[in-house]
Image 1 (cartoon, rainbow, N blue to C red):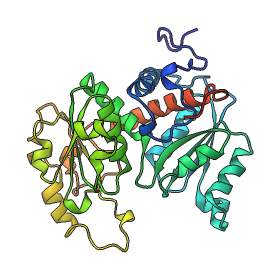
Image 2 (image 1 turned 180 degrees about the horizontal axis):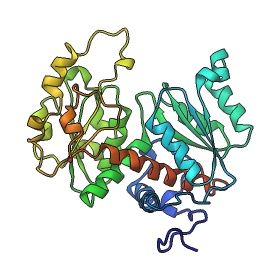
Image 3 (image 1 turned 180 degrees about the vertical axis):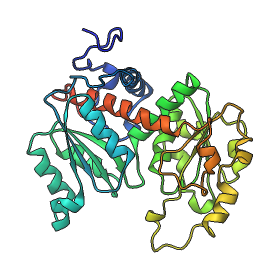
Image 4 (image 1 turned 60 degrees about the horizontal axis):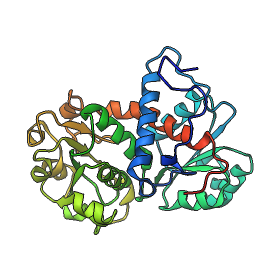
Length: 338
């Protein structure tokens, strides 16, 4: 039986590919290009099914997905919940303010207690880098990283890659500019790894005060060869196929000395406007992981223009997270941890 008239697309559990022999998704660093391709191809199918009047599939019926978010989220948390429900899984959302974490329970104790209830997947967001890796080593269920501190945000990179692939046809050979607060951006790190593995070249642009040391070394020889750093916006944008803007994460710099004079000065030097976008290719697309600080890193007229694919990124977020949940929860048992 096929779903929604998609050839070869079974309503049942997706067969586990040798190219995706992973029990958890804790970082893009663990995936090769073939595994990334498996996720993107399955997401394509789920994106097609989203256009149908009835969007729900029976793929994960009887499975349980727990969303354990210790940081604020709109897009990621909601899309994981929608993704689980569209696959007919039961979705449970837990916030620290209403859990025993507010009483002093540790992350690990919270996770172990949830694991004792028999979920199939725990999706975790935490301010501590490495938190999902800790849970993946401890829990019996699959673990998905929904963002850990300044470390990684793998599903964001996957949905960004899916958006680029749909807009540009292929990622191999693209010139991608990532501009903004690179010092605190887990999105930048995951995208740098993901895009270079898929054959793109990445320009990283920020003021020196927002440039972490060794960023181009993140993926070893691959990122060294396929990425470069600049502090000049015009240099980063020149001939770019894709422009990805990042917000300044003020919440991660509380109590620190200012990294730049003020938002107005940052916008003047590093904000994307119609004038600065002209340095990119005429058909360049504009991306942003959200939330946007309008008038700071991105001018409203650019954010709302036909070249922006920001809302398309949000749509791909559901499809990509459906693919991830299906691959992990479809047959977790017996798969070697990765």
